[in-house]
Amino acid sequence: MPEGLRPKIVHSTSFNPWVNLSIEEFLLKNVKPDEAILYLWQNDNTVVIGRNQNPWKECDCKGLEASGGKLARRLSGGGAVYHDLGNLNFTFVMNKKHYDVRKQQMVISDALKSHGIEAVFSGRNDMLINGRKFSGHAYYSTGTNAYHHGTILVNTDFEKLSGFLNPSPEKILSKSVASVKSRVINITEVDPLMTTDQIKRSMSESFAALYGPATSSNFESAPDAMIQLYEKYSSWDWCYGKSPAFDISHGKRFDWGEVEINLSLQKGSISCVKIFTDAMDVEVFDQLSKSLLGLAYQKPAIVDAVKDSVQDETIRKELAEWIKSW
Image 1 (spheres, rainbow, N blue to C red):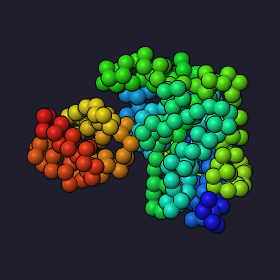
Image 2 (image 1 turned 120 degrees about the vertical axis):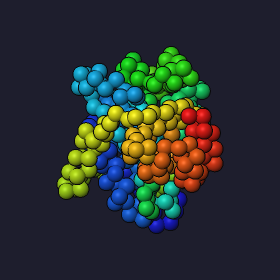
Image 3 (image 1 turned 30 degrees about the horizontal axis):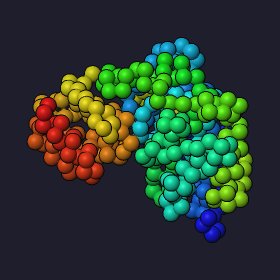
Image 4 (image 1 turned 60 degrees about the vertical axis):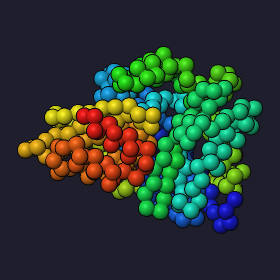
């Protein structure tokens, strides 16, 4: 464990996603260079979408609202997830010099191992039990700080999960609706007596074992900052965004994620860009949106913008080839 590091465990007592995401961003902005924070939180009857996703395409928004549920948009990329009180959310927040995804994942695997449950990593974003996903992860960084957050399915209602998450037609074709149920697992399927409180305790213990003795507290709100953040996360503009009627829309599913590029044109030039995607690399598509704005709607110009603004070689090549086929 790094010398001089101050581990902290922060609990939220709220089940409101807009409150909890506000706390998460507050911690990200204010974590000190010598701190490593494990933030544990739960949302009730909530769908959380990725930074660049289209809510109407990913969620049964009317059904969710009619049930008293909430839609929330997080800072990180990735896909839509359903949260209820049978799910535990975690966030590791720290300065980038202490940030280590594998070590952070070990906090989870060690917590389960203490209950005799073997969890394995699958790529960068998933953790599996018996070959089925119980934990999905996403990432975000700003300045010198970063966070790694995700879900832990303890006893989630899969009927509501599959009901409120409304996959796009391409996802249905590539994965099938039934696969939503078959590829995920609750921890209670392995240990019927497991509770979210037990996982919280075990996570706290394994975090302290890996990072050092940790202080534990409920979040003490910072009123001014929290009010501004809550206003953002609860706003219609942030959750749903203004979705104008675009002149041209192109969509495709790649191995690394689904992309929908919506363009509005004025006199042959791109006057408005909205890119929806469940890809993990949020910044890639933020930058691409800026690069496309003002360009003539011509394939060579758009391909050049992709080549200039997208750093990831696989994404750059596959986007360019797709755009050439428009």
